[in-house]
Image 1: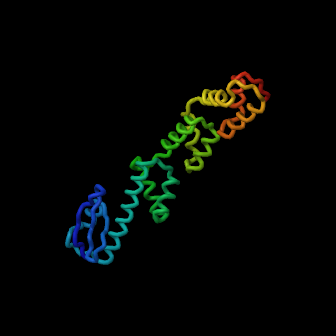
Image 2: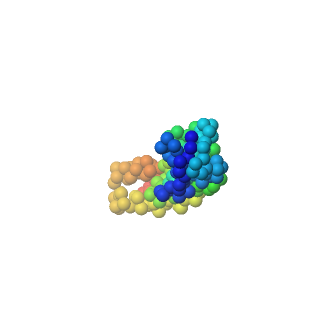
Image 3: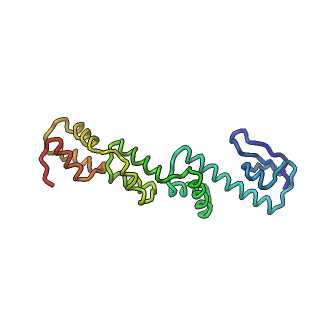
Length: 204
């Protein structure tokens, strides 16, 4: 198989297009151009063409992983799931995740901190945030360190009660507000402390 033309992609920096004699186009990275010593007119053996295609596919997977991580942070589990959707083998997925960690694109500790800050700022409690960390596949050993960086949520609970109750002392309204706080992931001790601050007598 002969490479009829080798030219840089106009759309993606660092990508090259190898136009083959059958009219097909092989998208390769700069690494493959160097490693396989590619040039227009080069004839590839069947085995060499197969190895080049495989290398180009892996290179494409890495590029897609970097693009995804630059756009939206992921956990290793989320990235692995995405790579599987892109038809990467389990071994390839593990290798790419390892490489993304080495390059600093995949940082689960930093990602966990972002999740905690985001949901804490939206007025959610630790239990709800833990559920979110679990859902996203963040390793449990990173949870507490991330949660310790969250600001004290007392003011968020107080603001929620003020907004919902508006000075009311009606027990049904207070029960509804307390249940809503529980659904948002706050513990009973946090809720009862807030109710005391609000001026309610609470029996633990």
